[in-house]
Length: 220
Figure 1 (cartoon, one colour):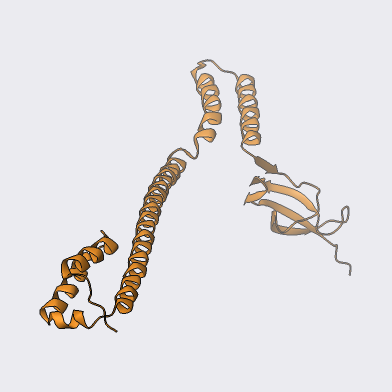
Figure 2 (tube, rainbow, N blue to C red):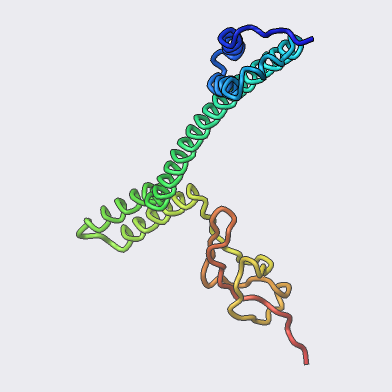
């Protein structure tokens, strides 16, 4: 048995109360008004059970819309947070890149600063020696010995090692054989003369020592 539904105004008010501010209120209004325009007789045919069922559907729909809106707000908040994190990370990377670029530029410009600092005392010593007007051969020699000692100390501080392989076994990795000479007094492949000393920087060969190497004496 169909029951007479409440007046349309009451129905619309109940629907709006169920929907609230969920964002679909206008659409519900349009649907109900379209139903009224198609004829009030259709509402008269709705039973109380059907009306209550539709009301329950609207309640669930409103709950779903509210849940979706809450999820959307959370997603928007998370997106905003992630965007802020991205901007901060990008700014940090830009700052790091600028600092690294500046460090590389400074390394190219001032990489030999330590070398220059160690070299200046040697230059001062040589300049003082040149200022002596009546220098004897002995005093010049003493000055050269002093300057050479200062250079050796400077090279040690910079990690430069002298290679002087006199009477050592020939090492192709550190020595360059300029000539070979028979010598019965030493074993073959022994350095018997150093024509030019070699040097290495922190165990890396800079210049090999130029040497003369012994070989076995040929017998008739």
